[in-house]
Image (tube, rainbow, N blue to C red; front, side, top):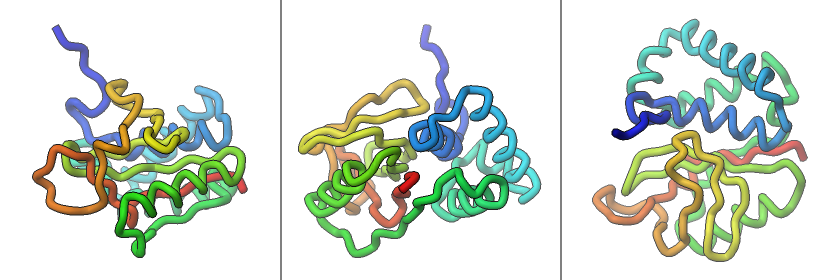
Length: 173
């Protein structure tokens, strides 16, 4: 008998990615993460999109709304926040940029937007030349090999498609 994990019946990977990113960037406690989760749920409910997010997941526009709402709740959640890396069209360039971002300062992470094999949002803890190490809400993934990735492309593929314009680069500095 299989155990159910986040993602089997819900689309909350985007919300859990925000919570896991906050934990990596700010070292939040479980209690603080619960408070943040509650605030996000209340915000989604207020916006009238809670049911859609639970059942269908979060797109980039929804994540932007949630992350921007965090600034009104607590301006220190993600002092460093950027997205929309539209000019990156090669895996090599994305890999170098993302790894450099993580190594450039303390308390940094990336919310990774994936397609191809799976539609998923997860959090990068660190990277090497060949591997992405994750803090993933589904408990299924721990790493993604570079050889299993590509940038953009057709959805019918056996590789993970990375969407640079939909990744979030987050940190304290």
